Length: 212
Image (cartoon, rainbow, N blue to C red; front, side, top):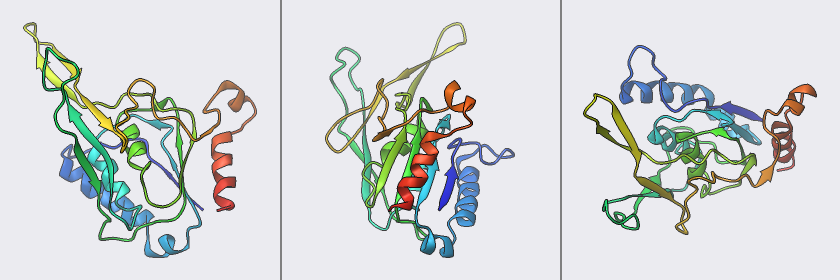
């Protein structure tokens, strides 16, 4: 059984904030975690996103490419393009997951989510919905904050950030506001759980994967 906790999708290299440096560090970590031996012998993988502050959506796609042997569409993005008409959007752009040229894990996955799964943590969760192979979401709904933002400077030197995009499922659904719901509901980091020294979502994921 494998356990992978992802707390962020950015800031992997404290000495270099560039995307290229982050990607290099992410690849180094994935190579250390998803070794050829592990990808062959893992019976199940728990991915814990319950405290994830977001970051780069592309980093999430990069991780998803280590979790499939079959190309698929993670989601489609569209942006508002008419300030006077909130129903007008650009044509949806499919964001694809292409299997990586590296060891890949393709077995059962349990994804743990909660209200502190935010932004890129949510788009990564959405990217796994259509993943070929068994993937189940356990815990609580994500926060419901998906959109990239449009920045506009203000006269006083401040900057306004406005969400202007939607992330669509294959059927055209978005999870803005509501968040992505779990398929199996369990408490996440409640006072009652802490008082009993329990992690019900994690335990359920382990039991579920053991039966896979």
